Amino acid sequence: MSKFEVRGKNVLLTGASSGIGKELALLFAQDGANLIIDSRPHNRSVLDSWADELRKKFNINVWPFHINLTDEKGPEKLYETAREAAGKIDALINDAGTFHYGCFSEIDYEQQELMVKTNVMAVFKLTRLALPDMIKAGEGRIMNITSCSAFQPTVYHAAYGATNSFVQTMSEAVDAELKGTGVRVLTFSPPYTKTPLLKAANLPERIPWFSVSGLWDPAVIARKGYQAFREGKTICIPGPMNWLMHSIIIRLSPHSLVNAVSLWALKSSK
Image (tube, rainbow, N blue to C red; front, top):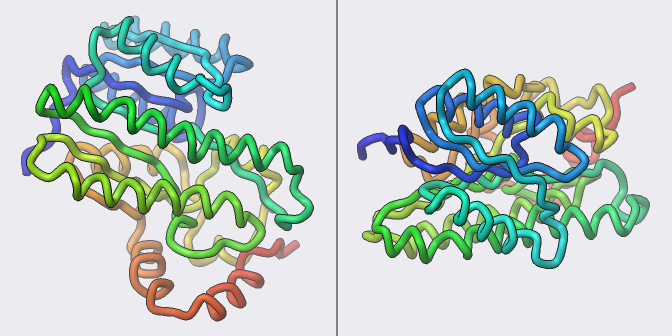
């Protein structure tokens, strides 16, 4: 399969003001894609500054939006305004997400509800909204960014892992349905990455699992995701150890064993 050409294409990218999303925006811009980027309203000044920098440096069109995807009609508003601004959406990257660490019964209820709205409903809606236009055009690509937690129960971030599992299985099934349409739905599942997401989640600075999967740099992770997107990989788990663990070992192990190991591996080692 030939690489997906991004030059001159209109790419809608959520969660673009920091972390992996910001690094992905840079990679798309370097290759000449026009960008429709979104982040939460409180990141308005950061996103607007980033959009201006990309626009001037790479001579591309960049449209920043500050739409809250947890609002009841937030995803619909973003897709419609993005399409009106750019004319059409050639590619969609669902990167926006939230994460909370701790015991399920102790993490604030409303925070977890907003996480489900961001990680599940926003991705579900944007994917569903974009597909008909792409199918009609006979080409298009969607990449939904999940995490390694998508492939097994994840203690101390139970709901977060579950949101990623939803997106992972939905994306794989939809991609199979799209065979022959010229449209693909891909997933990118990074391990723990040094982003503001982890800091906001109160993840401990040291957990035993870091010695297995590492704590990755967002620029490195973004490059791997971008390459997987261009190459059309249905599933991408960065790093050979992470791929082996989540694609094979965990899938062949009973959940009772996985949970027992997770209780140790994902607990603070301070």
